[in-house]
Image (cartoon, rainbow, N blue to C red; front, top):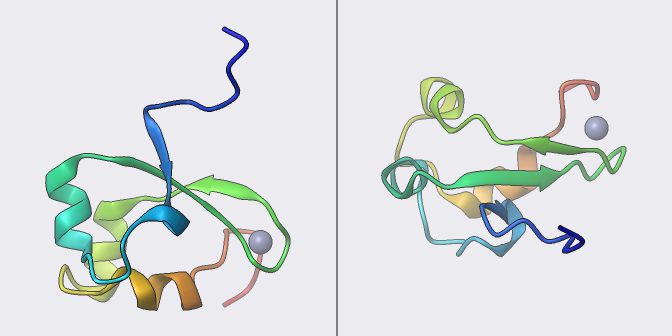
Length: 73
Ligand SMILES: [Zn+2]
């Protein structure tokens, strides 16, 4: 396997802004996001995001506020 693009992993960046966390959970996608602060890639934990923000939270919002574990706030 020399293909660097894993088809089972989508980037949060490629998800439609109008989609919600509930949509992600229903699709069972494995999502990665790249932290805007440090550039680290991390898997998105959809269920914990729903606990924290609610299932109706839009992806557009998450793209603005998500940071990785290493970056504060
Ligand atoms: Zn970070």
